[in-house]
Length: 118
Image (cartoon, rainbow, N blue to C red; front, side, top):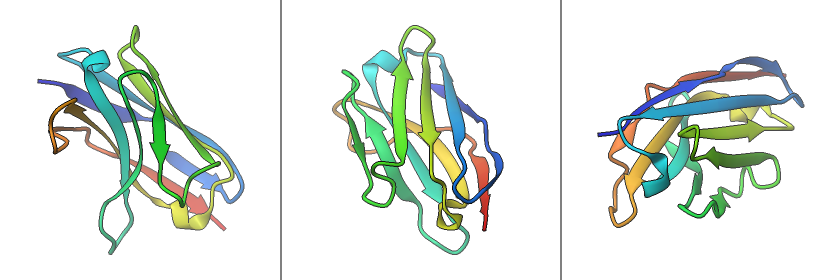
């Protein structure tokens, strides 16, 4: 089992920056693909980006060039740095983890609200 806890959400003005953290416990994140998802009101949950075991990252087109995912395996923590934020980035952001060979993300955090004002 992996327990995930996000932190760092809040209110920021358009064009600003915000950093989220996802602290894991129970098992090491070095064995897991880590990802950030988000869900805006009335919309489906969408993948923001993922970090593979070696640190390679992939991002949704909507955030590419503005968001950066990083992981600190020693601290068992994953980060999401968000720059040049837009009102459409407003959502609840979730951290998730899956085993390398799993198809689904089995472990989820409780989510943290990010609100970008125009």
